[in-house]
Amino acid sequence: MRTLYFDCNMGAAGDMLSAALFELLEESDKNLFLQKMNAGG
Image 1: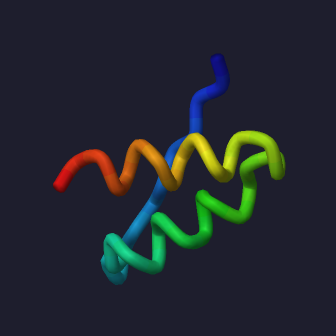
Image 2: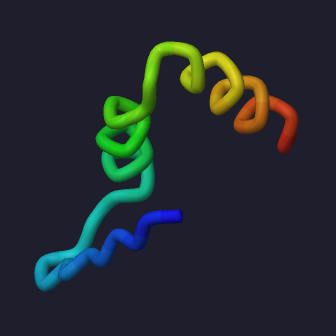
C-alpha cells in the first residue's frame, strides 16, 4: 500500500480531486472504480 499526502492550502473540490486520482489508475482498475462509485447510490 502506498501513502499519498495532500497539502490543500487553497482547498480542493471533491469532484476535481476524484477525477485527478482516477487518471492515476491502471486501465483495468478504472472499471472497478466506476462500479464502486455507482454502487453508492
